[in-house]
Image 1 (cartoon, rainbow, N blue to C red):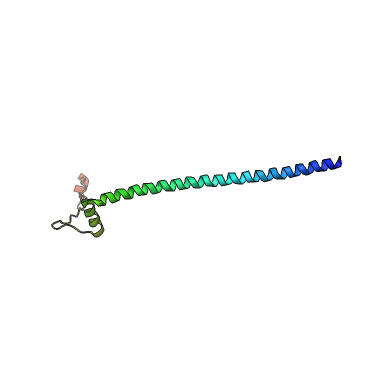
Image 2 (cartoon, rainbow, N blue to C red):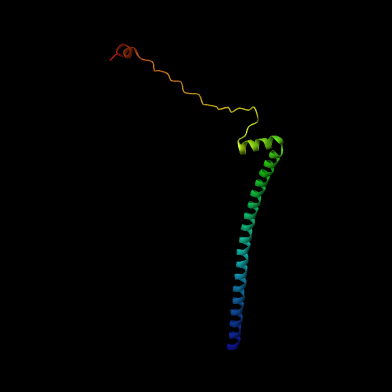
Length: 112
């Protein structure tokens, strides 16, 4: 009887160790799955940002491919003008200076 209890205790102990080992394996798989999901989301966001940049670069290439785009790019980069063109400088208007209107007593006693 004593040997039977000892054997059952040994079997239960082994089963508990196996169960603990399986739980740790499952836990580590869950952690790895969580890391994989977060990295996949980051990769997707990075891919979308690259696609947006690609679209912007393709639009810039299409704009520069035309003669007008080339002309604008050269003018912007090197500050050149066509023959006969002149520089126009836009100056903001000056504020009009007005003299304040004097009251009758300032006119009367303004000589002080």
